[in-house]
Image 1 (cartoon, one colour):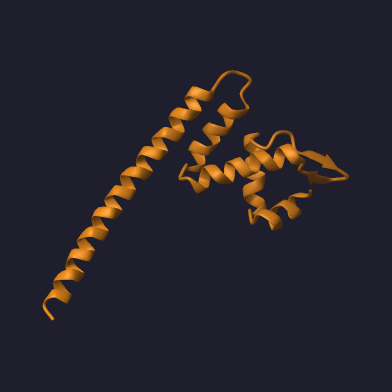
Image 2 (image 1 turned 90 degrees about the vertical axis):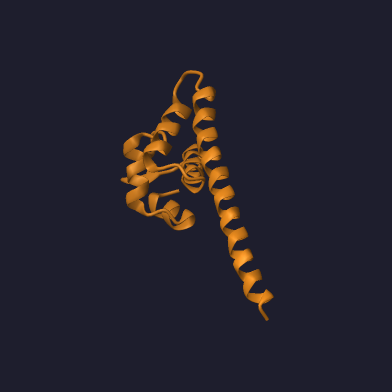
Length: 115
């Protein structure tokens, strides 16, 4: 697939794809007749990068994660630690939001109770 096709299909701006390429995170994207060509492995890595962003990693964190992922050494523990940190933060946010909902419901209850 060309960079334009990848951009359109996955709704990722071309400048972001080029940034990932510059980071070396999509592998060595091939150039055929002057066009970048993404293969299956490149798309898998791009998908992982997008997932990392979706779960809350910053661009810097996603880059660090991907560099560990593509490293030619055992990095599972480091990557798991990064994911556990984000998971803990997400759970804390959920608990905070649940407390907010509880308070909102209490206020709503008080309004209804006065009728």
